[in-house]
Length: 173
Image (tube, rainbow, N blue to C red; front, side):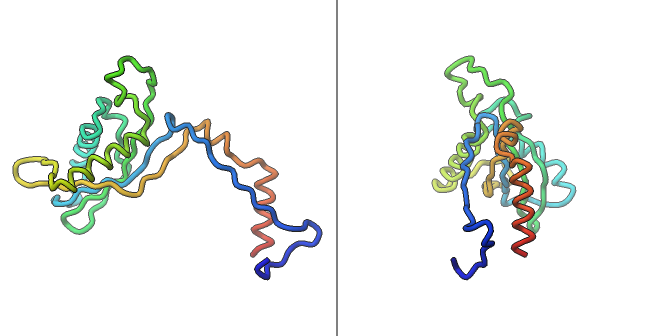
């Protein structure tokens, strides 16, 4: 097929897909949080990390600020901060009250809630004000899920699959 040589002793190459059935209640969401209209210097980045955590927690309505962590921060130009951020899983999954469901939401749904709230504010011409001096424009992008330890074990390749992958890599190169 497509003029690719085949090993006559093994026959056709078979491709198998294995779709992950991730437990989203234990997954962590990692994404980029952007702040426009900000004075961005190396000194300001140290101060902004805690403010980013509290801003995200207040937008998505969770009380546990420790679930939001800033992994890395950079400046793009002098007016834009980009922070690699994660929303960790809730370690206490008990549902105490129906009114507090948002508090116990998984990190993926909290990310989508954050994203939709920011888009809604942007589409309606509203911005979230940090202080009276200037308005900041917030945005999110590049989200991916980090599965928990149990999901990593469940979908890990067997040693036989790893050996076959290495041999195919050598054979193909």
